[in-house]
Amino acid sequence: MTRRLQATDRHVTAYLVGLGLAAGALLAALLLAGYGLNGLWATLALAGVAAFAERWSVKLTSRAEFEQSISLLPTLFAAAAFGPVPAMLVSATSMLGNPCRPPTRWGIYLLSRSITGAVAGLVASQSSHLLDSRLAGIALATCVAALVAEALDGIFAGITYTLRGHGGLLDPIRTIAPVVLGSVPLYAPVVAVLAYAYHEVSPWTLPLFFIPALAAQRSFILYQEQRRLAQDLSAANLQLERANLSFATALVATLDARDRYTAGHSAAVAIYAKDIAERMGLDEQHQRFAHLCGLVHDIGKIGLPPGLLEKPGALNLEERRQMEEHATIGERILANVDDYTEIARIVRHHHERVDGQGYPDGLSADAIPLISRILGVADAYDAMTSDRPYRDAMPSRVARLRLAQAVESQFDTSVVAAFEAILAGATEEYRLGTRGDFTFEVQEKTEQAA
Image (cartoon, rainbow, N blue to C red):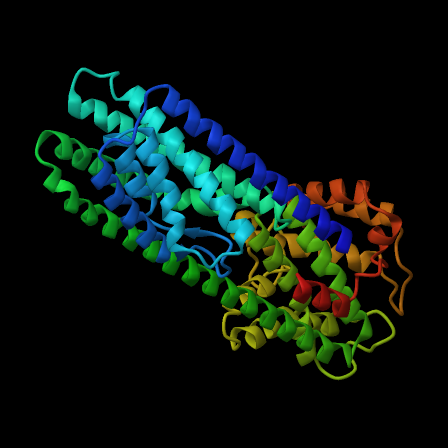
């Protein structure tokens, strides 16, 4: 661990030195090329605004790793109005507003900002003469400089983030990109107009710069709030999903007290249903939903008459009719639970047949919910491959043949085809439902750790 930290420190220090050499060489090249410090007093005023803006930077995440400020706006104004050297000065000076960072990190940001400002100013100077109209030229220069500056800022942030061992190169870019894409089209044209007004109307138009600056700052704050609310909502949804899973496993545990087979069967059906849903291209949310429905699909058996589940032999006709009531009993139980309305509907229909000969409602084909059709296949397969007091388990190949023979009568062809594709490449433990994770206790722990 210590060696890794030392290696990280060496890489960061080397990066700092490299940035310093690059910034110095870039400044020297600009001066030799004839670029000077134009508009000194306006540049100093913009530098002050940049430093003040950096002091009020907005965190884009719960940690302080990714921040955004409006310091780019005065840099952009300087680039469009005065050229690369003033833009370099304004951009570098912005870091004076945030002196509390660790020295190495502060130095990296100062040097990378100076390079960003210089390059943005150089691009603006070269592109401002491409159009005949003075206003159009400044507008083009400002927009191009904004894109270049934001791109360089993201690249430098990604390199720094990676060297410090906090993540990948693209992590900062993914976080910052939505803000940039939303704000650049708004502020770049306004800055261009103000830069044009500075030259063509009066230098006293410079204070008008505060209007887009404040608007941009407000947009960053709004983005921060929206991101925080989205994260809070995601956390609440995750907590609700875990509570739902805990409740479902508690129900299965209650059933387990009466019938050990049903509890193990429900755990296997849950895994099979989730995997079938994934194979059929359903999104992750629907896969988790299929898993949850699989866990509770037989919960209605709690309400069956005593002795029916425990009967060692085959059921007679009356007993089979009683057993069929477990689908509607399960629906009634689950319908009384908050947020389980759709699960209750799925459970009610998991014994329907595509030919309309199933129960309890005799639905057919697409009238049967897809997750119910998935549960029907998973349920039948695990029942056939499990030992019961009155019969031995079927081999997997025999059970799969039975499924294939029942397509378009009992089962949905696409569901059976998806399950067969899974089973064809699966281990024997998976096919027989004996793998270690085919218990609802293990599934609950796995889901809650996810």
